[in-house]
Length: 326
Image (cartoon, rainbow, N blue to C red; front, side):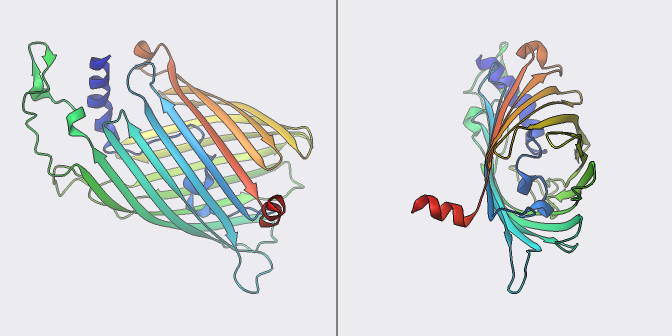
């Protein structure tokens, strides 16, 4: 098990230092999915949520990602309906207790189209910090390989000038969604540029090592079959430093009444995993669970076991919160 931990850290940390963590429920936390979706909802005063992912627990020390988010529409004086949205999120990504990334991001969005139109077109901007740290006492290097095993007492041969790094985070996004209830098809699409300032991220003091821009695009459409049943086929694509991720699939929604609804679906992340999603909506709370079935070369070690993920999203009004406290 220790050797598996070592192998995972050596192999996977090389990509984690250069690429962002990913989530299977890509659209659960909208403020993190696209800055332009911040506060772009109606009939609620705010939206709060949490998302958690745990993977590769059958192999070694678990890799986990946690998210907490909050956003809300924001009205300027005299606005009957808000064009603005504000919010932010915190993300913590823990890679086998050896490498950690923490993000704190706040931002806002502006609806370009008028609020009473059947089309929503918005832009958004986020700013914050990224804090990365490593625990080099939990890492091993090739210089420590001796007599067919790793010897932690041997010198690493690496000159780690800092075990942490603080970087600025700036993200820019644009989003479109059709809101016509009289149409069976309501398409949506988003385009985002993450890390647009290319901050330096090297722990070794290398000046040419920068966090690459991550380009992200998603496309889908909500297809309303009748008043109770709807489908949501979608494609999610992201690209960062010569690495692509493509996630495509569909979810189906069934609405029992105004209080209760359920959903289920499946997605495939190309060359990585098949994803099963189940969800329940009760009043103004959405619960969703997903499981990744590993299909990559790693499956020979995991027996196909991948990642478990869940999300809870709550939409509320100030009036309802106040009444519940009285």
